[in-house]
Image (cartoon, rainbow, N blue to C red; front, side, top):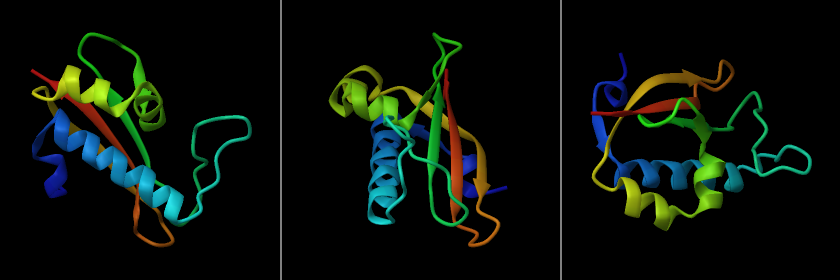
Length: 105
């Protein structure tokens, strides 16, 4: 098991991970879905992050967090705990493909 999957993170750390993933997608020229804020998955270097919050059954994408404002996320969830429950890698490059986080108690 990956170290990141055994560690709990505060919301401030999670927003840093989200910002890094978005920055990497931009630097790597990952395309966005047509007429959308969401990045398309590719076979080499795209990163997708999803988050499940305790108070909702809805799963939010990193792009939704960014669109809603990272400052708002930090204000609401800075002391909340999150855990990475799933991490997948690109087969061709072994780079991180996707990560799923869930809010913990």
